[in-house]
Amino acid sequence: MRPPWDETVWRNLDASMADADWHEIARQARHVLRAYSTSFFLVTRFLPPQKRAEVEVIYAAVRYPDEIVDTFPLTADRRLELLEDWSNGYEAGLEGRVDIPPFLAAFSEVVRRREIPPEHYRAFLDAMRQDAAPRTYATMDDLIHSYVYGSAIVVGYFLAYVYGGSDFRRTLESSRNLGIALQLTNFLRDVGEDQARGRVYLPQDMLRAEGISSLDVQDARQLEPLNRVLRRVSAIAEDRYAASERDLDAFSPDCVTAIRACIDVYRQLNLRIGRSAEGVRHRESVPMATKFHVLPPSKYWRLPLAWLGAI
View 1 (spheres, rainbow, N blue to C red):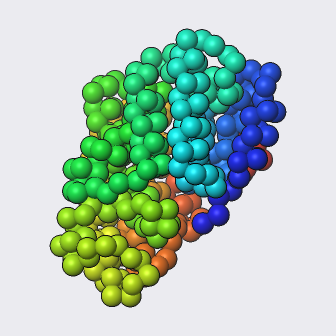
View 2 (cartoon, one colour):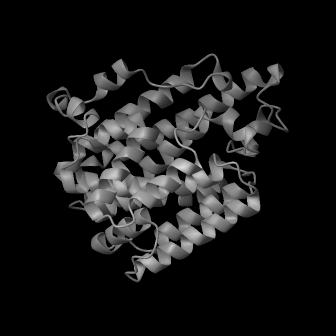
View 3 (spheres, one colour):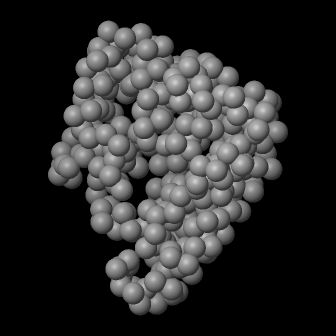
């Protein structure tokens, strides 16, 4: 799948915001979200304006490092160098410095404003460094502890601090479960693309149980065994979606509609992957009509305005 933007677009966008204030940077972050994730863009339209802007800034702050390791045509050493520069910028942002990339400056302000533990973003950047030098994962527990924690769980925590809630322990637990579920679904959708990047996010013990010692999505003999692995991981993700949904009442009421929409949309994607006969040979997606079906009808009026840039 071709990325929406190349490195030049990101660099030009960064230069265009040299003197921008927080609100302008947040507006540009909205363009990042809309360019990269139709589903998440749609569900975040149901957040109140200030929280929505903060979520968009968070998305831009995690999207750029992800692009460094996933799509920019760079050597592993250059990826690590750029991630180190970005990490140093984050630390400078925590100190209140403004001579750093605009998305980092805005994100650092959200971290300070919402009192997000700074180590969460450090864990995220550590996961991105792992992608620059991929490894395999022995079991599901190994995958979640060694990679998903930094790549997705802490991102859920960022959002939990923005969303707020009456029982924050349960808010964090719901965010953790949803982060794991979303990441597993993304792994399932991108098995072929990840292998092309030298990465395997399917647990090795699950592959070996199906007689696969070395993953090769082009090997016709692996198609059915891989489909069984995908169905197994999809079922684990479904359990996490269900667990996250059970604690929805712990979130601030003004965010529940958006979080429920997120669960419903990505759950549909996960179910489609689990049921697909084509498996890794087809990159599954949720049709727009299906997305609209799971979104709250009383809020549909927001969506045309969102695409016009009004919200």
